[in-house]
Amino acid sequence: PSPKNGTAPTPLINYLDTQYFGEISIGSPAQMFNVVFDTGSANLWVPSHSCSPLYTACFTHNRYDASKSLTHIYNGTGFSIQYASGNVRGFLSEDVVVVGGIPVVQVFAEATALPAIPFIFAKFDGVLGMGYPDVAIDGITPVFDRIMSQHVLKQNVFSVYYSRDPTHIPGGELVLGGTDPNYHTGSFHYMNTKEKGKWEVVMKGVSVGADMLFCMNGCTAVIDTGSSYITGPASSISILMKTIGAVELAEGGYTVNCNLVKLLPTVAFHLGGQEYSLTEEDYILWQSEFGEDICSVTFKALDVPPPTGPIWILGANFIARYYTEFDRGNNRIGFAQAI
Ligand SMILES: COCCCC[C@@](O)(c1ccccc1-c1ccccc1)[C@@H]1CCCN(C(=O)[C@H]2C[C@@H](N)[C@@H](O)C2)C1
Image (tube, rainbow, N blue to C red; front, side, top):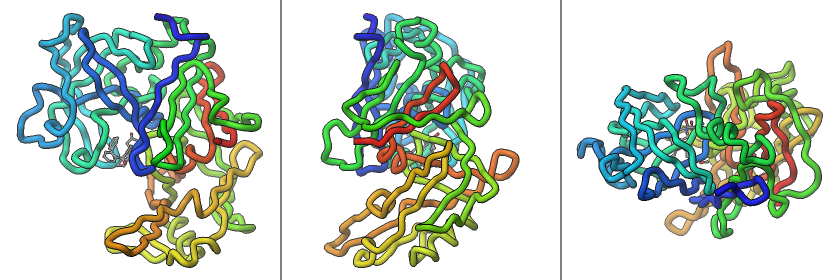
């Protein structure tokens, strides 16, 4: 069924402002899966029915059963994908995948080795990479490329809305083929991707309050729908934390005194001639644990070695503030104020 007016929306679930995911189906009859739509990777995988019982994370999630699908095509090639948290291993299969009501015949991976950390904490089953074909493992054509080649979309773009309030229903929305005016206001500002083939742009600086403190000579910003937070080079993050008076916790996170949160400065990212500022509301995760309030700072240190790094990764808490359009037709990214 061709999508209505050339766009195909998928509602997303927001789990605690840290995990955003939506439903797809694989196989005939349809087997349903919740996946993270991840611009930082370009492969689709879901847990496999042939995942060994040793992997607890497989058994707490939906698993694809090839023997139950009339449209399954055997492949069997080995697969392994590396994330910052470790790797996921399995084998390739092919079947009908439906995203936003659009069916494609897709090569994807059945995960048979799913590390308990972090996947026992995942509220979703798998990952659907929305990155460019250049970053796809085993040269597999990504889902969005398969959809574009069907010429059912009004524009070769997709847009992401992430809600900032976990009680807001829906928790977010992915639109294939366009944007959703219900979730953004004002005009879009565009910037070209730094190099064709990655959802990353040149960033001209990062300011804290009125002072530009980081990335003064330019650096790379990765716009990553599959990251929960914002990451920056460890040296910059430690200066940023000192500047806002945050203290480091044992396991590497930072917290601030909840009474001082309203005094915290804005942090602004200079992208494409615009300043995209986040206030403390956008970068403090206010949690009440055992009756006391913990205000953790959602900036994390991550050092990526050159030539790729140094990079800043702008994840969910940035996208929740700035509605993002990923434009494959023009190799550019657009931001507008999210509603
Ligand atoms: C907005 O929704 C975010 C989903 C949560 C992502 C994540 O927080 C997560 C939490 C719990 C369980 C599993 C995973 C998770 C792990 C791997 C892939 C996808 C999700 C990831 C934790 C590790 C670091 N990180 C990435 O490297 C991510 C970076 C991204 N580009 C991916 O490729 C891997 C984010």
